Length: 139
Image 1: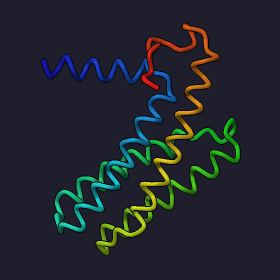
Image 2: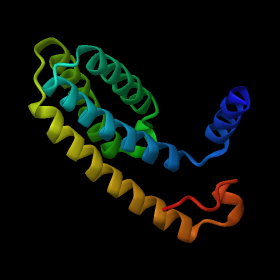
Image 3: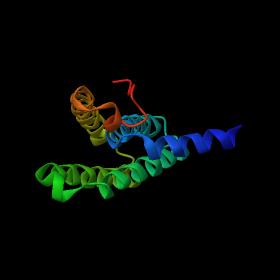
Image 4: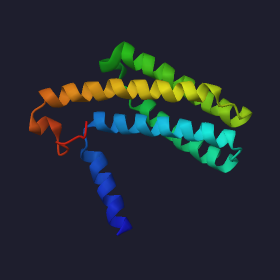
């Protein structure tokens, strides 16, 4: 059954509109940043390391997905945020300092709200074919 679930997840990722994937990624990054803060406060080194690795992987994927031709200044701004976040994750790992991670979690939540608004506008304008298989995006 788990193999079927993995196949379904990969299929969903391949067919889901990219904006939904960005929203999910931002949700997860904010959650992971908060988890890292909590792990640092509780001195849970293993949990902190795992959460930092996951957050780093997601942010790296977001960074590689940036389209500088189409996104122009927005892509440049997002790259700066992603780069700063990766630097702060390294600092959190090395220095066990969580202060900036709380602010970054809020920044990702704010960015996520903006992406949700963009998605809402997209779904109001898009035809069912443009929306892909995920007609009910839960937004």
